[in-house]
Length: 390
Image (cartoon, rainbow, N blue to C red; front, side):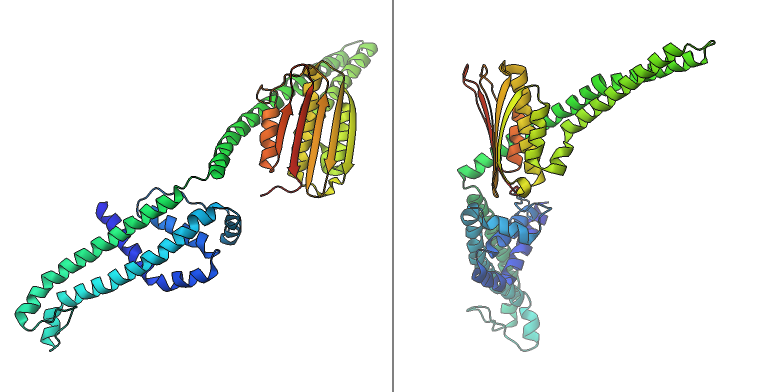
């Protein structure tokens, strides 16, 4: 295994030596070339057995990824130094590989050259007899071994510098990585909570009503086949079955609406929030402004469910019957604020569902905050760009 890795290192150094003209030309198109060369160097390091993480997502094209990479400050701190290092070390690899391997070949085949009347010269050494050409053969083997060792050392130096540049700690990048880990865990928990809610709603709502319908229909069939038929009982059972069927249908509609409201897709965010306020058991004072036609579907959905969850929490925990919703839609962003004058003391991580909504807002490039001093009411404030950054 060690021999294979050494062979790979020598091979990659020979390839980078031959690619030196391309690397030299790439300087003319900096900074576009820097991410490409740096990602290629990370691939080289992985092929040589070094644990490096690729930065290009597998589902991104090179052009799209380079554009996104150019917007990152870490490109200047990591990719550009890797490009400069690649150019300088490629020059060194080119000189070592060219003179080392050619010199080794000439020395090893010196007796053959002597037979054809050629005194092959390597540096200051020029054979003057057959004996000297024979002595040159082990010297050529030694020169080849030294060349391989030097190229391997250059490869290790590349790895060392790559890790050094990649190891520069960008506080913003580290904070985003930690936020990503937290968001992924929170979203997983939120999706599991939502799945359980849907299952519970179907079990306790529509399923129970449909069971009642089936029972009434069975009783209706038995009453209809009885002799003499009890017309009053048949009518009563039919009406009960119809009532349960209507309840089941209504509960199914409520469950589907909680998954994704039809009004949001057909009429837009403002109209969907108005419908939500009209269905709420609270008296909702809604203020809306702007044009919601520029909102993307993910952003509108995130804002809608933020309002829905906030109103649900007010009706359950705030101890008041009034809520205020301020919705502002601009061409580039949307802001919403849900307020009440209740008991306060709400926390975003208390299991109220707001933690999952915050992660949903973050997934579209926005954020959600809860301001809830004890006894001072609660404000849920959310904002997001009209179009997600992805």
